[in-house]
Length: 123
Ligand SMILES: [Zn+2]
Image (cartoon, rainbow, N blue to C red):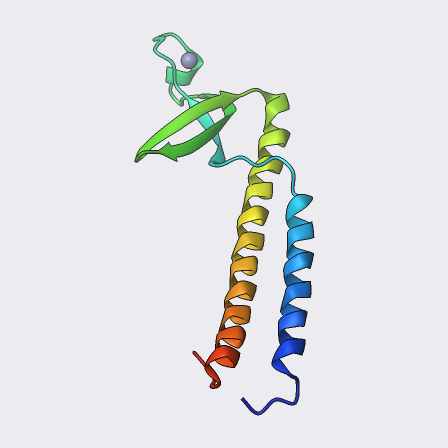
């Protein structure tokens, strides 16, 4: 590696980056798995507008769903619960992104430190 920056400096930079990511992580707040969908439904009542021609389905309803052991679990949400779920689901995406970045930074640091320990650049 033809770099004038020492391994120590590069590791120190990575450590700063890791700390920045850890701080970001601590500010994320509550998270929720799954996803939200807006659904229209049809009921079982023959005379209902949802079964008319043309049909006017009920809804839209907000539904949260999540895969659990290969099965999809769903829950209907009240209107006031929707913003919370939207925020928490977004938080979870952010959480995963930050954790992935932390892992990438750690891998870079590991490579640098191992190359130093071995006396030649690792890969
Ligand atoms: Zn109906």
